Image (tube, rainbow, N blue to C red; front, side, top):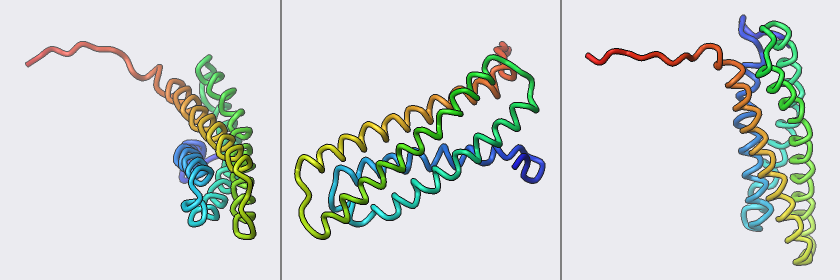
Length: 159
């Protein structure tokens, strides 16, 4: 996928990742820590994790296409390199969502051990936080790549 209605597909798809990955990460944390929420939101969280994981390579592929159609620069290269790492974070988030779902299914039959739920909660917290940080890093580098040559400092005269 290269363009959608004349716009680079990456510009459109990236907004899904910017919203869905942190949202999914927050839900994974909450589901990992709070059993009452886990009972209600574990399945939508798992679906969001799958969608995020599927959209990530589509977004990076569209970004690779866009990279070939813009001027080469260090900022674009940095953004591309960081963007290529997002699949690992999305996949890790999916794995943790699956583990949280497994805990939920186990809770329906028997109480899981306290140690297991603590390990899952810690894993959810670490992976989800790392995902949110990486989305921020990729987005920040992308905004630098897109806007660093456009924005200039100017002085305006006061009326």
